[in-house]
Image 1 (cartoon, rainbow, N blue to C red):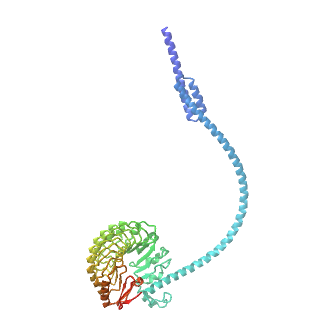
Image 2 (image 1 turned 45 degrees about the horizontal axis):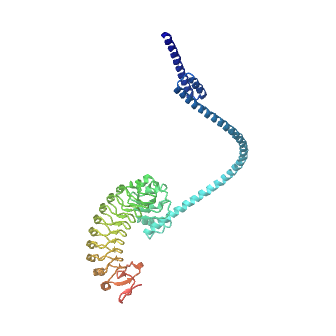
Image 3 (image 1 turned 30 degrees about the vertical axis):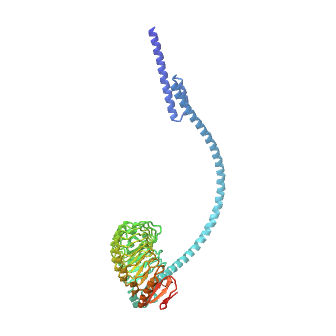
Length: 525
C-alpha cells in the first residue's frame, strides 16, 4: 500500500514539474515576442502559460503582461486608424498638389515668355550700363583729379602757414629753385581736419620734414597712403585719428607716433595700442574706466590725454612714463594720485580739473619741470608744503576747492605768473606772497579775505586782479589802491569779459559794482 501511495505521489510530482516547465517556456516565449513587438502572439503565449500553472502570483504576472500587450495592440490599432485618415488627407492633398502643379506649369510657361522679354530688356540695359560705366570711370578719374587738387590745396595751406613766401605748388612749378628752397625750410605740416582721403604726395618734397599732423581726417585710406608713408624719413613723426590701429597696415604702424583714438565705446585702452612703443602722443576719446599697468610700455610718450574718461584711480606704473611732458586727466573721477606721479621729472603740464581729489601726495614736489598745474573743481582742503618745490611753475589754478589757507612755501614759486584761488574759503594770504613778483594775473574772488597784502600792490607785472565777492575793508582797500597807483594806472571794472590786459602800464581790478569815491583813478563800467 505504501508503495502505491509513493508511486502516485511521484507521478503527480512529475506532472506538476512538467506543467511548471511548460509555463516558463510559454511565458518566456511571450516575453521574446513582446520585445519584438509581436503583441498578439505574446498574448496567446501568456494565455497558454496560464493553463499550465495554478500559482496565483504567476497567473497575475502573466495577466499583467497580457494587459500591457493589449494596450499596445490598442495603441497600434489607433495609430493605424490615424495613419489611414492621414493617408486619405495626403491623397487629397496630392490630388490638389497635382492640380496646382498643372497651374504652376502654365504659369511657368507664361513666366518663360516674360523672362525672354526681360532677357531682351536686360541685354538692352547691359548696353546702357556699359555706357554708364564708361561715364562713371570718366567721373571717377575727374574726382581723383579733384581730390588731388584738394590735397595739393591743403598742402599749400599748411606750407603757407609756415612760410609766407609760398605761392602754391602749381604756381611755383616753374620756379623750381625757389620752390625747393622754401620746401627745405618746412619741418612740420598741420593738415588736421581737412577731410583728406589720402596723404598729399607733395609732403615727400619737404626734405627736412620732422612732423606731419593728420588728425581729424578719419576717412584716410591708409592702404592707399602706404607708398607715401613708406617714403617718409625714419625720424618723421606722424599723428593720426583712427578708431582701430588695425586699420593701418602692420608694417606701417611703426611710422605712427601719435594716435587720437576715436572709438567712443572703449572701456580701456586696447592692448594693440599699448604695444605701440614708438608712440609720443596718445589721446583717448572714450569714457575708459580703467588704465592698464601696461601703460608703462609707452615710455616714449610726451603727451597723454585722457580727459572726459571715468578713471577712479591711476596705476603706479604711470610713474614710468619718463618722457611725459603733458598729462591731461581733467574731468575724471580721481580721488587720489599715486606717489609715483612724482617720478615724472620731465612733466611740464598737469591737468587735473573736475576730479574728486581731497589731497595731493607730497611727491608732487618732485615735478621739477612743471610749468602749469590745473587743480580747479576738486575737494582740496590743504596743499602739501612740497608744492613750493615747483620752482618753474608759471600757472597754478586752484579755483573751486575747499582751501582755507596756503602753505608758506607758496613764496618759493618765483616763476609764477598766474594764480587762481577763486571760490575757496581762504581768509588770509600768507606774508610770503610778496615774493611772487612775476605775477601778472591773480584771481581771489569768492573767498573770505578782508585785507589784501600791500606787497601785492607793488607787483610790477600785475595786469589783472580779480576780487569779486570779497568782503574787503574799505580803508585797507583804499590804501592798497594808493600804493598800486604809484606804479601803474588803476582801472576798476566789474566787467569780467575784460580780464585780459597786455598793457604793462595798467592794472585792471575787477570787483563788484559799487559807488567809488576815488576821483584820481580811471574807472570803467
